[in-house]
Length: 328
Image (cartoon, rainbow, N blue to C red; front, top):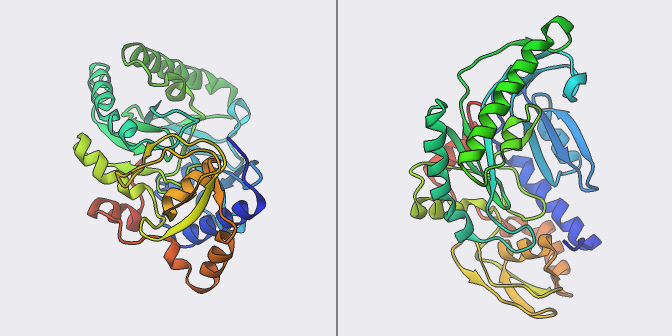
């Protein structure tokens, strides 16, 4: 993936800052049991408390990625595997599957085709007694996250040597379940499920390399319903257009609006919806044309709302934006 020039990085940071200034992210609840982990503009990992002044911290340097621990951990310091002190509470089982090629633009149909795999996972998990699906989420880039509620509630002190066997037992049980389901349902990354220190992308946060956000997907998990919901994966305008120039050959791709764009040859100039243009720029396929940065600079100072879309919200998504996602 090609690196962005300084103008593109500045614009990206401003756009992310504008979004996180008002966005109601879907933090796992209660936030006090989940540490947040962000990737800064300079590609450094940084742990932050998810329940204390989180918005202010996100705005200091708008992050490229926002994650949160999947399982509940009560600790005064960031979780660091065996070196963590405090209490471990367990939680949902997360399954991850990447459907799209890392080095190609986004494909709507690649995600829509995931519904069959979700159904297979649901049946397989039911055979192992995991019950109903708790949450399905588009990751913001290449794949789908599916989580099941774990009814096995635990409270394990992490800094007591005499209790270490309980954590080892929990890990062993998780690994057995994950490997068994991973054996019968091919493609799902069982290592993600078995890793108790795993972090997952925070719902409604923006993926800094795709310009798309991680969004919850609601049942029924049919192709038509998933396709309809995927239009919410972008917060940037699908109506306003800007000029870009491709920096390498770009294959045709289906974006979240259902439209097909491309193919484009290297060095081609074209005018695209802002959301599509940003996706290609952040992926390293294009750059703004000479006058683009000047126009965008004026929009930021005079009418920055034109860069975003606010009309894309279903009743379900509206509820998530208002209250955040429950559970986890």
